[in-house]
Image (cartoon, rainbow, N blue to C red):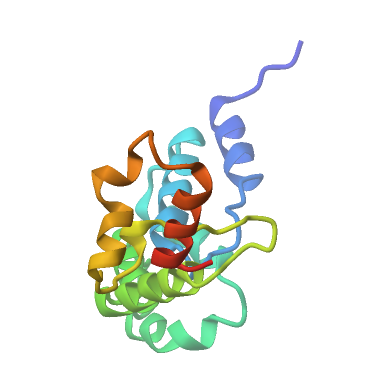
Length: 161
């Protein structure tokens, strides 16, 4: 039986560890996932964590962070410093988040499915009620002595097709 040294096992775990590609879309969530991976693999050294994050950044983003990396010098980059920089660089400002949110709200509020029949309800429409229309929507409209045809005609007159 061969003895496996604990340090060899830990080194193998770290060597086989790879974070998913860094995402600028939801950088906060990406960092949360990365930190979970660090805990699972017991990677606690700040420099090692930063190196893993840097190795997960796509080549297309490196030019945007190269000046900051150069300003850090030859010293090992601290994970928290790198995280703070990347979040500041790639997270949208509160104004951009609000604009993005309202864009999606506007977009989806104007969407109408061809598979759904949309019905206007009295409280969905703003209009001025004439005295004739008032009788259509008043409680007397629901009286049992009116035929369903006359009620339907009054409804159509008041609210359209």
